[in-house]
Length: 219
Length: 219
Figure 1: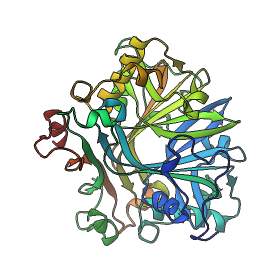
Figure 2 (figure 1 turned 30 degrees about the horizontal axis):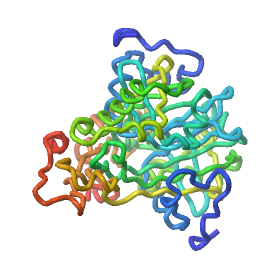
Figure 3 (figure 1 turned 45 degrees about the vertical axis):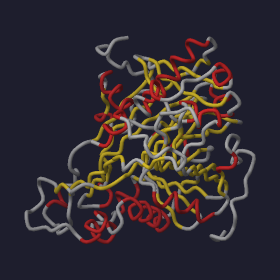
């Protein structure tokens, strides 16, 4: 699939409520996934859903997840259906009535059944994607995984074949009857995610500078 | 249950990996839930998990969720098991080896089977909790729900009986062998969530000031 391949809704990736918020452009899916720092992974465990935050990475139309080879969330996730959701909260929407309060956000919801990678080269590629997504530049800067670490790590891949993107932007949408009454403030309070000043490890030598790949995240 | 009632782990709320990160103090559960702006709600649909971002509120040991009476996520959620997860990402942890890269975070994971509220007074109480959690001060400032809106809205309650809290803080923890080698920077890049300048609705009269309940969120 290329960026120009639209997202083709399936039954479960078709939005029920607020279908007008759906985006079918694959580039928008990539944009949400690439901007997010963590995802929420939903798996089944003993017949009930379990939702856990975790890191991820993306290469083209593949999403990578990882964890300890013994982690129960990944044991549950491999070869059984999962849902991976990334949400970017952009603002809180204050309306003239509380029922029209809302949030501006971009969310990506990916459905699928992950496969567990076996060969070392594929696992390394997946781990690199996760590291470079979460902490870009760290793969070359820090020590890369050795064979023992690789063996102790599960890497799962999930195809981005079945996914939906939902976006809300803009001001509140109030009822006509509320437009003229009000002294209530209405608008959007932006929510921003930023990086603070890096805090060096207390055990780090004093002469190790903050490297460019971290400095440039500080904007 | 009071704040002093510890969280009593059940099979599914007992942490598998990194059990040392578990917090059993109910006040820590409340703190994570109260600081979060959105949760990720996991429900089962056609045998697969679906994870969707949504607003929520808390009153004592009750979590409230809401949605359109017709929303499929809530239809699926009432009277069937759900998982509600709130994650506060506090920092990205850069280690001397990529496999010890991590994240500092506080997460709350709540398991249970929600009930759908029926009577108007209870639904109003739940909606107020959600509004006051997400946009504190809006309940009194904006128009409150009328009976028609109330009838069109589902409000679910979930007891905070079965929940876990997981917290990671502090610098990276590297292997001894990596401590002396490195020229790699190690430490924590803080992740901060802040509010930007409120953007008034274009249809708002120019003389409506930003009210104190919003101004005070700007810190």
